[in-house]
Image (cartoon, rainbow, N blue to C red):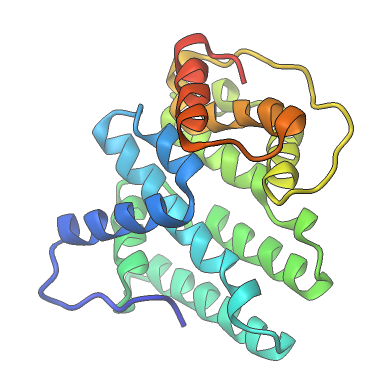
Length: 218
């Protein structure tokens, strides 16, 4: 059901490198932000984003609602098995197992993301996709506490809408986030440029994210 099995001979490092390349290709803005995290947190962010991509791609890979629900159930079952100490042969599942064992991610929170994605898929409403929950999980990876990681999740929804090319009202005013949260949230600064100019070039994207990391303003 996922994009790639994980041969038994592959090391965890090989799998992480493969996921890193995949996230860079399919989710460059979040990948760029993650470059500013310490190595262990960067790996956790990449694994989280690779998991999110597996769920997001259901929308474009199947049109039959039943087949879509089967895909989501596959991930739900895979997470249940991880909680029970079992592991499917899949690169993202293997990487998730390491993050769950290290208590950087939890199966309960990941199950919630699956359910929210499934609801959005059934409703054919991308606004229901769990962008805010993803951002909160990413912030918690980079933070010492849930309190520190808290932020206005409407920002994530606005960013996602603009990324899809949708119209929004005026963006929520720029807010400043703590330095340790910036690798998880810096890409949200792009929403201001996207609102004014539409999609921008790669250099402008990189500069915007760098400014968010330097100043904290998203």
